[in-house]
Length: 340
Image 1 (cartoon, rainbow, N blue to C red):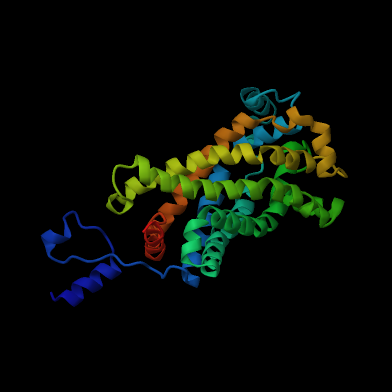
Image 2 (tube, rainbow, N blue to C red; image 1 turned 135 degrees about the vertical axis):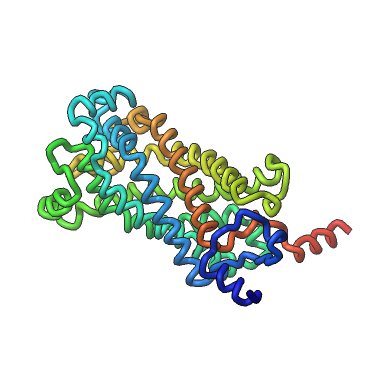
């Protein structure tokens, strides 16, 4: 069998053989499935966002439900364990899954825009300011790209988030997404779907800016000071472990930064006719931070899992995964010239 036929078989049936390429003498360099910065690349990034956000947010619906109920009715739901106990007593195990449908669809759409557009804006802004400034101002680049992406992601999320909160925190309002959407339209019109958009921006944009900027810089620092070898020498499994660790660290900061606005969003969608400012004043400083610990656990785990899944999808789809940023050679020469 000639080499052409062997290569064709490997292309059609891309299984891993239980022996090395050196042993079978048909070494094959794994190629990327798309070009970095291409439309195909951005589309696959969006797909990765759908998978990572849609799955992870749906997985933590029970904890999210209890967290929301603690925020809107702290007298009845005094803590995480009490919240689960009360919910199980009133609604049974099935009650813990309330709101899964708007969560899945809403956060899938948000993930598409969040991750896909982040990559678009990051490349676009980087090309605008040039290679050297992209390195020197990389934290600002991450912040700007993530904020821009989240602005559009929240427009996609808002209708489903509004339905989710009503299902989870308003007993008797609706049990399913099919019941909630027409009822919202009938009672409040289109306003119902975007009533919480501004506070959603207030919650999600700082959260996402922290999520991406903190992750990117933490990943860079882990490879520089913690991981004993360069990323290029790490296996894909080792790289994914580092990704998970950086994601969890970022998630803790995300939860703290975005929690007050998250509380306002939960309460706002429950109270008709109220504004974000009115809700914030009514809750007070202590009320704004109610449910922080379960949110830290939820968002820390959620963010770590999202980054892990997103990076795993990139590995699975053989997408380009640029290494942590390094100082451009042109900038190194300039710095050497300044020292000299």
